[in-house]
Image (cartoon, rainbow, N blue to C red; front, side, top):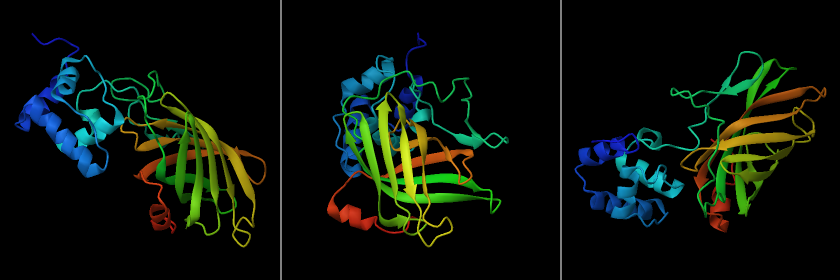
Length: 254
């Protein structure tokens, strides 16, 4: 008899792929090699997932599972510590996190991140802000290199890698379980619309289960010292921080 704790969804997906537990483990290891993220998936690990002994995969395994099955990890029957973060306008000048269909709110991060998880790499930063003087919403984009030191993440946009020329962005973040909190600073171009103004504020993001996306909100003062807020997202584009990789992303984000 099936118990409530077993992961019947993952088992059904595996059977649908005509794979044994050992076949799936081998496929996950191959996927890790293809993704440049070697893993140690084993038949025993698959058994632990399907029995419910292990309720959520580490990000490196979540990415391999998505690669092998063609399904998002949220659709594979796991009990994930942080549901996929969705930020939307609340029609009142702010932004909220969506609620999951099962009633679990995305902000309820209760589990620590997997041991050894490293968020260093090149990330695409995207945020939205409303310009009262132009009565329009704009998007800022930067390629940012994040470096992890224990529970701290420091970020700096790459030279020339912003949607607004000469607008460098700095991030100083702390990881607490699946929540990332910290501050941001952006120096606008001297010859741009904001005439070299320096903006700064706070930011809080939720890390998605695959470890490849962080989504949340920023808050900061406008030029008239009014408090503004809006959505902010970071998406991992490359785990390398080599000189060649930094050069590759030192250009305007698409």
